[in-house]
Length: 399
Image (cartoon, rainbow, N blue to C red; front, top):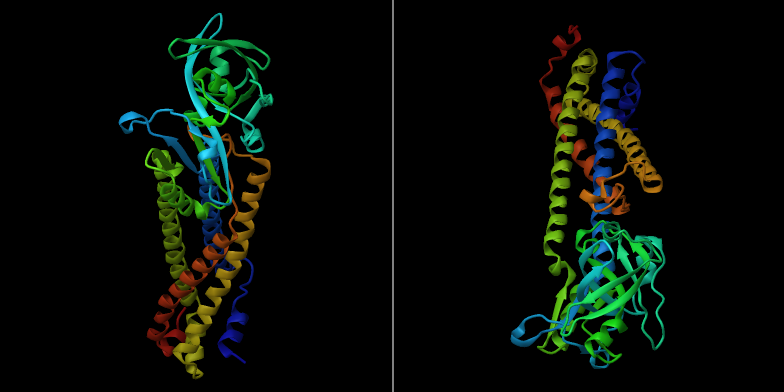
């Protein structure tokens, strides 16, 4: 039998209301709250990053392809769908942009008309649709239906079913009567401010393109780990006249901002672990001082310093394990409540979303538990070294 473990079990349950019971409770609170805080920080960070990236990817794909204009300046020169050879495992959405002015009896607003077709992922877009429905495309024809952002609808006082004129900027200018059938909101200014969705065939007709031409292509990769590989393949395959760009580079400011969140969470984890470790050192020192008489008695009976150190280290590790169990229940429980009921709201104007997002990652849960257990358990050996300096005769007389 492990004598140190046996003695640790006998001394690990202090009587209720004693000073030892209070110290044990403090240790449990420190470890459990520390782990719960780290878990929530990671879940929120992952949820925030995935939500923002998901919105960008839903609207622009993972890779963007367009043609260069004269002098290598970007312009919407048409590219043919038939001339493209796509890597396996990707989904492609053709699109075209057309700028113009929306006009009703009261307002005039500059907007960007994004032409799309049946390749557009209406299922993914459905989560952003707040009112109305999506566009009904006409096979072989042109639909005059559009989906506009909530901001634009409020500025132009529009509702699903309303008609509005759009003056397309070209030579000569063209005017079309469009019908609003849906209103969307992503919380992202780049999309909600001026972008409306309509039929790609309308842009083709205005530009004099064939039904197999588009201004560009948005490439969706099934596995995000393969984006770089697909990007390299497209970059090498397409000619010099095509501009290939990853979405993470196209919106580099947003992606760099998201990466900064990782640094903030890492700093938080360092601070929590430092505080937990420092407090555990203090708690073990207090427990050693409280049990000075027991230490002196054990030394007088022939116990070695190593044996006595193990008793307190085992007690400390038992406290850490109990704290981890409580911390997991607390952190995962709070995260689950927010995930399913969204009790903590956010201002979408500032945070790009209406509630605090949660993204569970069980590898993160395992990693934080192991990191906390190993680090806090290691620092327990530091105060235990104090035991070798205790004189058994003075310890027995200690009060």
